Amino acid sequence: MKPVKDVGIIGYGAYVPRYRLPASEVARVWKNGEDVLPVHEKSVPGLDEDTATMAIEAARSALQRAGVDPQLIGAVWVGSESHPYAVKPTSTIVAEALGIVPNTLAGDWEFACKAGTEALQASIGLVGSGMARYALAIGMDTAQGRPGDALEYTAAAGGAAYIVGPAEEALAVFEGSFSYVTDTPDFFRRPYQHYPQHGSRFTGEPAYFKHIQAAAKALMEELGARPEDFTYAVFHQPNIKFPQQVAKMLGFRPEQIKPGLLVGEIGNTYAGSSLIGLSATLDAAKPGDRILLVSFGSGAGSDAFALRVTEAIEERRARAYLTREYVSRRKPIDYGLYVRYRRKLHMH
Amino acid sequence: MGIPAYWRTRAQRYALVGEVCHKCGAKIFPPRDVCPECSRPASDPFTFSGRGEVYSFSTIYQPPEGFEEFVPYTVAIVKLEEGPLVTAQLTDVDPAEVHIGMPVEMVTRKLREEGEEGQIIYGYKFRPLLRNTLTPRPSGQAA
Ligand SMILES: [Zn+2]
Image (tube, rainbow over all chains, first blue to last red; front, side, top):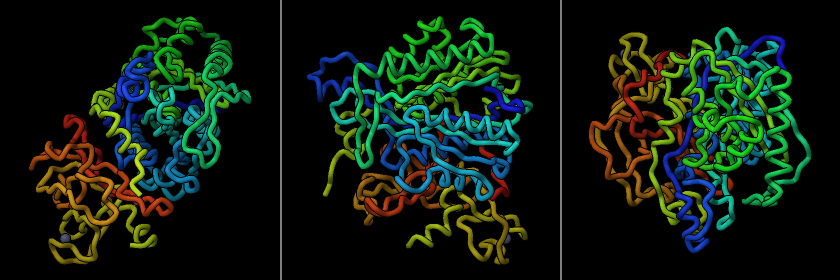
């Protein structure tokens, strides 16, 4: 897919909270210390953090890099499966905090781990059609796994924000994009339920690998591009193994996914996962580099994007904190503090 | 404060929007009717950069109602780089690490929740500055 007018990313920003729960802590409490750990550790939000506050910080960095008047942003779209309110948009809180209100679209997107890239696709359409000069797309989550469940090792907090604008102002231009969805019940959560259900074996082959490969192949075919034409690639990262496997299946080398592969250090940030992989990759990219980004969301679907980095990257990158600065700002906590911070204790 | 009072102060709470006196140029926070420097009626909206340093602080173990969940936490008077002093909670820091002169930056966080069913109140807090070589956030008359 390609919009009528060429568009790109003009600003980006990442956010990861400060606290880390080592996977060994979960194994200590639930598995007598004996289990195969899917990540080294995961990020945990502080008591005063939620998807809105984290989105605000990432969006502030994106705005700093973009250097545009917030009043020219025509949409604020936040993709998450952990919006703080069941009814009341996260996006209006973000729009207010950034001075984007009142003449703007604002809305929250939901599609498991691809809610953020869905917002990004829509931003390309909105800006590419000329309906808005700029659009802000955010993928951010504070994901929760049921205590003792396999997801408790990985369900983490973090994400990234992107301001989409005209290609002439971009630090990375969209060469094309593609989306691929089917009705697949690999992972879901019913209303009023705290924790999701997932079909353990079912999540791999017919869900993650099928959708990512289909979207990536279709986009590369549309562009006449091969894996070796890309400097870097980012795939949704629910654990360390899956993105490495899908990269190999598609013909990408381990070095191509290395800068964006953060899951071992921060866990699976759900709607933020592929988008924070992209922000870490942009932090490492040089003008002329090409980047392939492919998300995956249960339910299920994938969005694929091809980007070409421009000369603007270096100066814009220096205007805000790097993804790595948030990743390395870490305070390890034990399972007890984790239970308190994630409000799994009932005080009354 | 009820919902209308929180709603009216959201720009100052979310983004440190204060005022600049158009007579003497003093930067004013929180916004008020009269310039504290020259006593003229104030003034134009001014967004603070969010940078400052800890001027004094105190760690709270016996919190007021609504803040029990956060103990122990540190409340500081922060001297903003534009001049005004502002009282706020510190976050992302262990109480033992806080010291006078510590460089801090503003973040928007949850201040408290009005119970399980009520609204969530967001506002400014300050955390240790992540890196001080960064060009500061532009402050200015955006609102
Ligand atoms: Zn004055």
